[in-house]
Image (cartoon, rainbow, N blue to C red):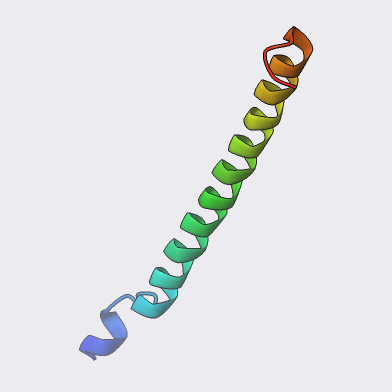
Length: 52
C-alpha cells in the first residue's frame, strides 16, 4: 500500500540528461552570440580603418 501512496518521481538519469541538454543548448546559444558579436566588432574595425 505504501508504494501506491507514494508519488512516482522521475528517474534521476532522465533529470540529469535534461540538465545536460539545457546546459548544451545554453552553451551553443552563448557561442553563437559570441560569434555574432565578434563579426560585428571586426566589421566595425574594418570600416573605421583600424584593421585591414
